[in-house]
Image (cartoon, rainbow, N blue to C red; front, side):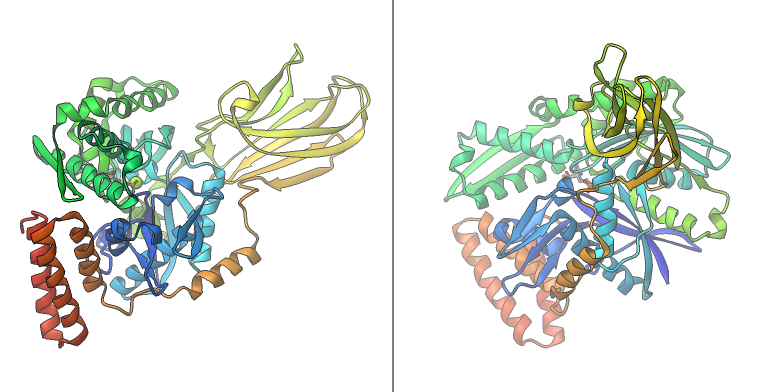
Length: 559
Ligand code: ADP
Ligand code: MG
């Protein structure tokens, strides 16, 4: 029986486990660290997850979904062929696959998972994530903030060195900045800031737009397949620029070739709006923690987008501190979640490590001030340590008032409407005079950032509500119904995933190449499929090796 930590990313997901020999990443069924967070249905209605599904984003966009984490906890649905799924259900399918792969690799039942979520995930998104695990039949008691997990990985590697650290996590769709204090093996997160809508995706889009502009391609005239090809090449070009001074992006559409040459300076120019957005959360985290950059022990970079050299130079420009990058940006969060699973299972080697967490938003209710204006009355301040519980008293505003309504908001603005409305609670009471005490409101945040509100009137009568994601929170029965629906889905694991990946990849490359190469590859694909259907195991293995080599050479990947 094992407990594993899972980084359930917007772009990629991965799992780690803590054992007596330390924490390690669990490879997926294809032997890779990262499983793309992509889910699709094949033509027979079987579920495909990860790398194979990612290849099919171009060839079967109408049957494949990606980046669904961005809409976690919302009503948005994704159509995969004839069927519709919510982001939560797709996450549940993804979790199922990650846990199944981990189980197969460790040769052990997975008892429980710890899942990391962005610090800026609100209550609805957190509840949706935990329930996604339940829908997959997986126990998840604990969520961990992604930056907290990254800090855990860093401190684990550096022997719990005392000091204050900044973690910048720049992934595919989110940016999180956090300040962490570590003292005597006790880790405290003292501030978090971030942007839920900033990531590598925005850089890809900037390259995509620039490519269309210089090649006179009008986005509205392109087919979904053509857009997917240009988008994919935009990302490939961006990744090439992390290790090369120059990258040439070239795309064939309708037998015509379009191209663009980029270097890191031109990338900064075309994506400067996104890079500039790194400033604000970094400044905010420093301001909230009342720290100057030179008081930081280190700035730790994690998340795939931190592999862009421009990111480190921007952060150095903002803070004057050279960030260190000795953690693998791809695996740090998952490893941290893995370390946390070791803490949770009370592993002897980690028995002295304590981790605290904070709530990323202020919470309060609306009330009237002395000028009769409606303003926020803050009950829990942002960055309060979890778990926490705060209470405030309120007074009648009308003569003979017999009811109070508390409207609950999350956010930092003094004007309630500018914040996020979470719901309301009312309580009745005996007639009360203006300015006399009428009721209290208590807000309690548990260790997962789940909010419970108790409203008590002056006679001591209490109404209580778990407010978190009230509009998304599903009952046990509803979860069971969805679980039953997902249980019925057939996963395509009976088929050989490796050959499936090669077929999907070949289909994508066929869409991307022209005449001679295309015909050549189509023939090779037919022969490959024939061998997979009719060949013996030795022939199949050989065919897979050869076909992979062929695809690698066509895509310019050297071994
Ligand atoms: P998430 O946490 O959102 O799942 P990751 O931390 O895995 O995301 O980061 C994914 C992002 O990192 C993608 O936008 C990807 O394009 C980008 N990325 C990955 N490798 C590189 C690289 N070598 N250079 C630049 N960007 C990269
Ligand atoms: Mg991430």
